[in-house]
Length: 158
Image (cartoon, rainbow, N blue to C red):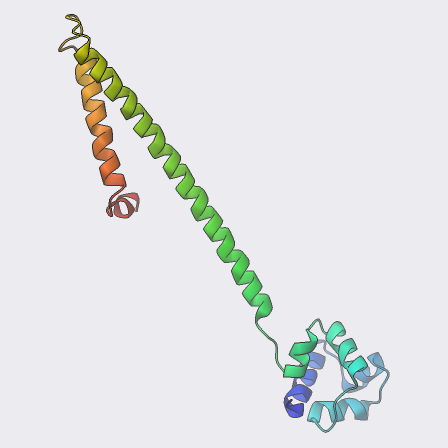
């Protein structure tokens, strides 16, 4: 435990509150000289006063004993931000997956219609616009599926 570092941190906390040593001393029912000794590292506050200082200055006791602020709060905020970005990204992937599924279902329906029109041997549908359209739609969705599941999908999306 570095008492000089702790004392310097107490001084920083006091100055952040814009208090003089006298005002800070009154807050914790000690003398100005005691606060001066804390800040120079000549003495440390008792544990009960350390707890009061930590509470009053909104710092963790561990931070006070380490003589510096820890970035745990920043780490928590960063973690929350990363989780929000991941959730947004996940929602985006779900939307894209749903769109691709709809296109594949449409392609499957087109292929089924194409097979039906080919195998039905219906003279009025054989070689018709419907048969050609269904065959083209099925082929198009097959190509789309291959492209979107390949390594080029990210480039296309960008």
